[in-house]
Image (cartoon, rainbow, N blue to C red; front, side):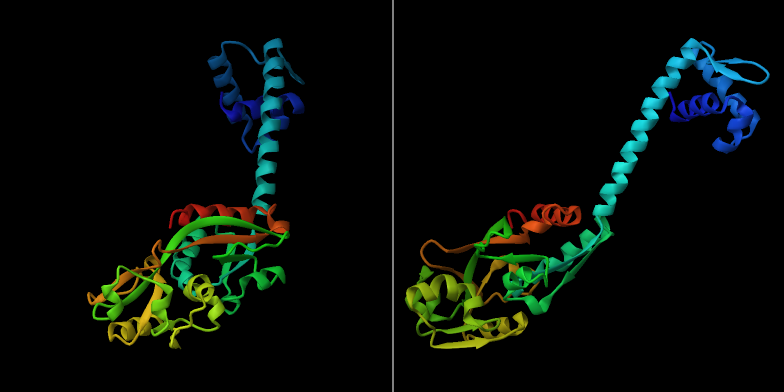
Length: 296
């Protein structure tokens, strides 16, 4: 049975007649009378006893009235719940990451978020790069993307994916002869990084520093295109994950080498404040982000 018929029965029963129901249902008396006759024809029984001044429900009509009330109440309650949920879906989210290379994939994801969740506004906070954890703790950003799980009881960390950092060099570089690049090989190497401080450079923090190795020369080149040109001229080596270079044209003269015998792997985490976990718009972002980036 269509919902309009349940509304029709309820309104006529509550108002006492079609005349009184016409305005509430935004239909003419003739249209309401036609709908009621059509319904009774489908059902095979009378819903109302008609008198000049009062329309009374039949026994069958009374049961339909009770059923209709229950269904309509549930529908209204559900829509109220949906409105409350949608209200919680609106919000502004400020995002940053400790690694500039991760910005390669974020704009396209934010564009998708804008289509799926137009009520969520996402901003990339570039000035918080390299120090997203202090910024999230001071409420300057809402979500941080890091490669080391922070030990703080007020934060929640969600594993996103694991990647591997490779050494990118010209094929004529002497290190290309090696099966993999060990820490000691960096001691007389020109290492090209995105920016200082060194503590924000994964290959240094996770591989060279634990082995007490500092390259002979370190140059910060903020533009990846320029860094690749320098490597292509055999001026040094660059250490990055392959996925971060997908949007760049890579010369055929460049090669990738494993760092360490087992490779230099790192796990990325999405970090949020525990106090924000109950916010629906935050959860919508987190679940979409994990779905987009899980597995790399």
